[in-house]
Image (cartoon, rainbow, N blue to C red):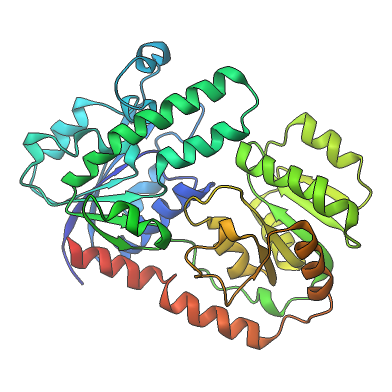
Length: 374
């Protein structure tokens, strides 16, 4: 066991771990703690969302909390991106200077002080979840509200201007293999796949029902866009039931789902209900229309579920070729559904996943890799 100490500056409070990016953070903390790293965490929060919690005390030596700034209009006219300026707090810098331990900035959001002269001598790592300006531009293309679309485009521009600060990092830890060429122009970039809950379940051997499942936060525009693609292009020509599971669906989405006889909405499912539906679905459908990050819901579906169909945007530099059916056009997807519904999920499929998970998606291996860097 090591006694290394590490600061982690986190864009949110990582508990409850109930969405993609924060799941990576929470299980990264648990994994680093498990191998003996002493963690000093710096978390940002705002009212009504993940707030200070005793849960983090199980894994961290010290936890600092900082309230995100709310002066939206003032911050909107800052030169910094809003996701950075709202987390700009001098107390973070003061607390980082209390010792000389290495620092992991989790997300570009947290990098206000990455290039600060007072941290010049410190070893610094940055965890990148996306090429953020690409992500925000992608959100802008599917946003219907004019003012929101304008904000997203402005934020994308500022993020692109801010991104070169990554050159002050000793290492960049990219969640996606496909992003390495982009970030390598700033600093040495290493592929560290997402951390996740590695609990073992006998899900693959459970009986499946002949239905397809799409799951995700339905209040997020990216997921809502994918659901509309399924409702418009897949469901009307699919001979099998489709279930849509997730939190915060819009009224427009609920109304549209009700018009299709073979589509059922599971609104705001509990964690146990979501686990059950992922395990019993014969096919998990997971689509996105912008190539950003590795989706934790895909890792979850591969860990707990049976057959998985994704589109090319979900595939990270061919990492998922052996575990998923990769289809793009509605016709290809429908044909793949029809074919896979007759294919039993066997031990052979399970073994292929085990090999890939052991190689890439291995929390113990990846946390030790981070430890070696610091």
